Length: 405
Image 1: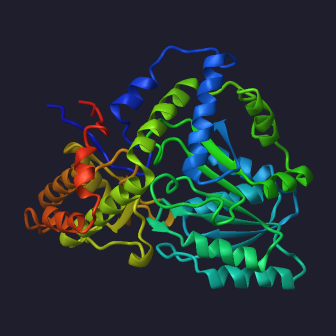
Image 2: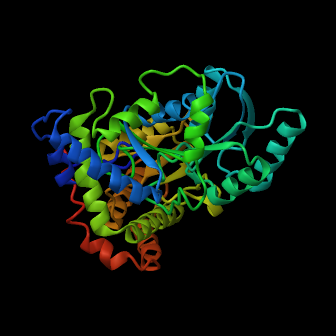
Image 3: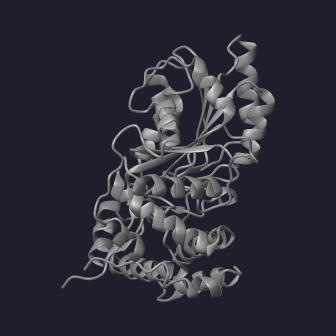
């Protein structure tokens, strides 16, 4: 007998019904007036969400493509770059820069921990003392592989003070749109995000903001680029187009999703995600499951937890999937050691309570000692401390997701 699927991974995220339906619309001419109007609406809405006056460009690719664009448009082979990595996706950002010939200095933080501003400042000072002042700093806002949110305002301020001529390239893929973010207020140069995360849309689009400082850097940059040439995207955007064929269906969906997000209001969105994050962490701890991320920097979009002793993740995953709950496993060195619960995008506290109920039942079936209802009770207590709870319940119908049978 089939049952509803609860997709609780950190992306792709479930789609509200209105967004899913928008993605199935008939195609339009991507060089015509309909798409021009759509691109204008989406770009303006993204500027508001990014909290920036900088141009926001839309690329047809995954978030990784956006990170590659951030690197190749603003750097030259041999440029000294500081990579600040707190997990698998920070490592990926560094790998891109190294592959294109950047002279990389790595500041690798223990997985599960956040970076500290003093460490960033010291690393940049050390590079300058070696006669290699940083041309760029690679920063991750929210590290999906570990469930940690970096203190980005502090890191950016430290980097700006220690290396005022460096450009700040930021992976904002899994946090922007769900938690507070200030592109201009934090003086960030290039910020990348992806449609399949907090934006409640299908995969296929990367959105990149570019500051005037970054455009100046692009004039001297010599890393090769064609498809990801942001200058071509900027020139096309003036005409209401993209240089290459865009993912029109995803753009339809993103347009509707952004409308839903603005109708809800970002202050409420941030509070909703904070409530979902707190509920998830409280529920897991009530089950006796140990959290992985530093509590001081635990993400409100994805929670990481240690696989219980005596249980293989593959077995646990199979049991939960059989009950309709889809979680994510660990990555890299954490494969088989942790699991991750995504709570971003079209997610309500009721969704988290349902996921915790299944998780509690599934773990109990595997022989892990559980007290029925304890996880949900703890989660409800955590939710009660967040003022967004009544509105969150009211918004459940607006965020309705049609679960596949």
